[in-house]
Image (cartoon, rainbow, N blue to C red; front, side, top):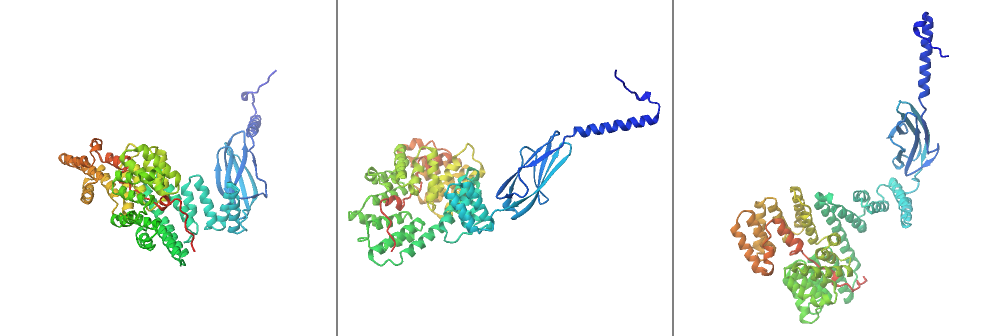
Length: 572
């Protein structure tokens, strides 16, 4: 039998009050029973020693659901986590060595809390010196334990934020992940001695890699200037070291070797005039060794001093001492003056012998002549024989029809030949022509690159040619006109400039004058006239001359391709 009591049946107020109290108490007890307790535990134990980046994990549960978990260090809130696993990655190197109070608080959805406190002791071995920690990092790196290497390198940098060895190691670890920003930052914080050229080379390579990132296009010119400045210090230092190594050369043969070595260092540094002066001291034109006269001709050729360059070449030819290097330098001179067929014929016999410098010349010549298959073959072979030669990599960048192979080679050329501007302008042209749209910002970024080149080589025709076409493309004909006028006055029989003249006249509406320029193009090269007649816009002309034909690629040669089998002479 069930019994129930109604309030209406209770006549006594005292009974009503008693029942009310009982009901309220029952409700309170029922509510408390429904509220589940929070269970909170930590993986860490009181008194544990921790180091490096320590992962503090909390395990919290509640029937009401956990809302969040807070982590405090020395009563200061460090992190709040709202999802499982509840954790805080504590970079202990940011805190002092020794004991620290750790408090973890869990909150459930009803506002209940549970707290656990303990003491953890940081021990990163900072009692050791930065050198000792860096040595441990290097030992781990040699053992290919990159995780341990990174830990000890970070500790060394905590002890000494400017420690060079630790900074280099950290930078290399970031570079392995292509994190160029962090790699650069790690090295730039270090104390780099003025003679640490290997560190400068490492930093320059990171800046170049960052410059080549598509998202960093707006900063390319500034990054390349940084690379240039670093490589200039490296090259100038190499010159001084070479001079010091050979200062005691007394015997005639040693003196010649000294002039050759110092001249090569100057040539590598882009100091061509000084290099020529050094090579001249090897002896008279009639008596100097063949390789010295070839080097002298190369130094003059890279300055576009044709008359001076031809003097040692003619001397060697007359004496019948000319060799493959002599002919390659003559071919280079012809390339730089757009005599492509002549250049290809000059190096023909040596291409068959697979002489690296001749292969480079042939690759450039065949590219300009439209012999793409041959150009790619010569370039690939040259790059395989002398992979560390910037001229061989640039020839591959120009000659390869494979975009990926070409881009890789161009990056290598930019790294290996910082004082040659052909690869830099090649990059600028590719940057402009990629994508379907060309914004004003994109044009300005490319113009910044041409400005960089002209800052260091004021008479570079290709840089000015690219500038003029970019001005035309963006509707700035008044800025393009004086550049083109000056170039045509200086070199009015050049194919690319005549094409640019036709494009300019079309852009300003002078259609009658377009045919004058096109007729000059036809007379210059009737075989390809009809293909060139279809180039109506600045971008079409830029693509044809600088990407497809590489008419004015600013080719170059290096001692590495000209003298690949010769051993470097030993300093006295």
